[in-house]
Amino acid sequence: MMKAMTFKAFAITHEIDLNKIAIHCGIPKKFTWEQPLILRGGILNSILKKNMDETQMVLVFSFGSVVFINLSSSKEIRDFFLYIQSFEPDLDIQSAYKYTDDYSLHIKETESLELTDEYVVVPVYEVFYPELISTVLAKSVALEKTEEQLGKIHDTLENMIDRLEKGKLRIGNKELARTTAKIVRHEYNTLAYIMILDKPDITWSSSTANEFYDKMLEFFELNDRYKILKSKTDILYNIMDGFSTISHSIRGLFVEWIIVSLILFEIVLTLLGIAGWI
View (cartoon, rainbow, N blue to C red):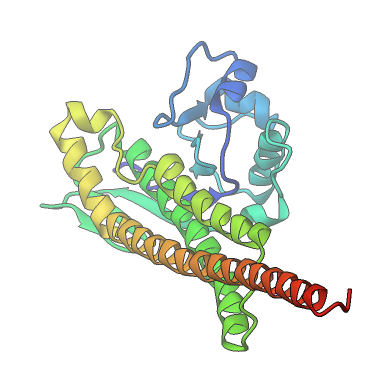
């Protein structure tokens, strides 16, 4: 019976340039957004400066997630994060451990696939299992990171709503622009980077792989979580439109009052002139 494979996923940043790492590792391949960079064998040995087992590997995803397979040493994980930091200087090592998930793959005689929160059991090992499980875990922790960031945007809007309730109606263009940019960045990170709706290439050529991936996707509720995020984002856009309308109305009213004041001032000057006061 094959030994269980362990997976440890982290969402460490928004984006990782896989091609920079591939060039440094001597991998002659141009990586696209949907392809993970799989590091194992001699390449992983040179990165972590120790001999790694053939079953140990690290998958790096362009949307900022990293998945360690059969590798759980805290020192090795930290060393790998430091290696990634050499390509992505903005990476905060301390916060890299915040969004994480553990999972395992078990092979044993069973009539059907068994999925739980902590592991999946399959009757026969397939070479695509590690990549597909890693992809789902990587997207799940990346979504978790995005979900929390959306909460921070909600907090910002709540403060703006509180100000409106207190009669402080004026909201600056810069504040509106900054908040809108946060919403756009959130949507872009979710849709373009995490690519919830995209499937790994192997699922298009193997029905077994496609079925397994769909079941993992459904179990981790990635599509449902994505739809909820998309719905919340649309609500945020509607709120921002409301803020923008109020702000523009106030500015328009202010300009109108200035025009009226100038007209009244001109009328007063004219009347004073007629009366011989000036």
